[in-house]
Length: 66
Figure 1: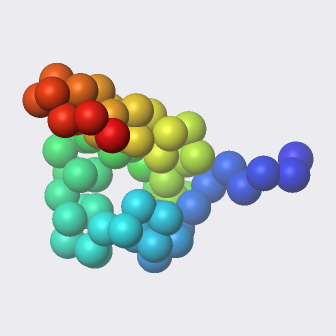
Figure 2: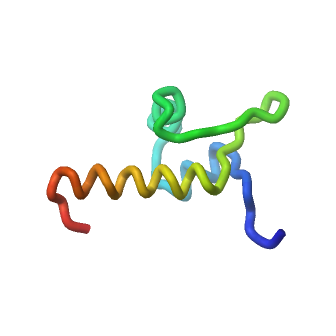
Figure 3: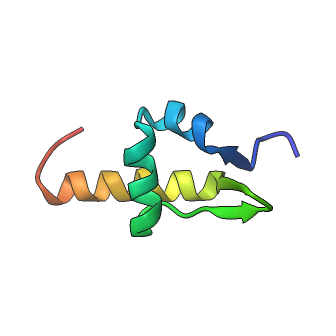
């Protein structure tokens, strides 16, 4: 397995250019999925891709071209 499959919160904050509180709000709302391994919250790579697709769909819904 070459690609990283699970990311820690600080890594996702950097990847998505989101602040900590915004990221946790997206997790709480269910817009961004995560898993827990022990005490650590991890975000699967597939959840990040799904979240980006959601943002793109929402952008298209509002007529904002990327």
